[in-house]
Length: 193
Image (cartoon, rainbow, N blue to C red):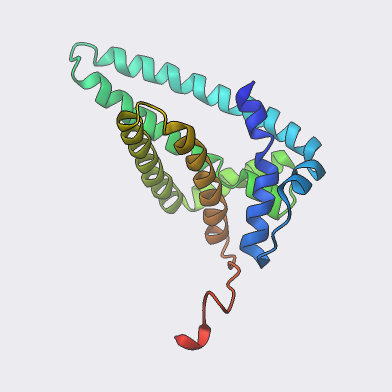
């Protein structure tokens, strides 16, 4: 239920990221959220079910992989972490352009998912490597902060990682489709080059 409720905010947040990246528009979050509420609920329901199915498959593969190396108990945490990172990377990579296609191109949810998978396979190396590095950094950061703050810093780190993934989704979507970002002349002076 928590994941479902959290996912309902993604469409409104994605619209804000799109506004900033396309023409530096800054629509209010609540305006975006309320105007897209019915679409957000449907997206949240479909995404929660799709992720649940993917996660169940991941757990089954993880269980059988760990039972194969059960004779060497030292390898179990290492193998488990590698498999989890790879599965999180594949999941993020497969779904990376789903929400941007809904937000930017105003596609149907299911068409957007299909186009996201196609875009992933067209840009496999770039997308997979970006998410692999991202997940390794996020997991390392969260583990480091959890150890040294006795888990308290995770209250900040986990939402920050979620925001990072949202920006990474839109950035990879823009670069994979050859779209240009908004650049203000105060930020980027073309005459300087």
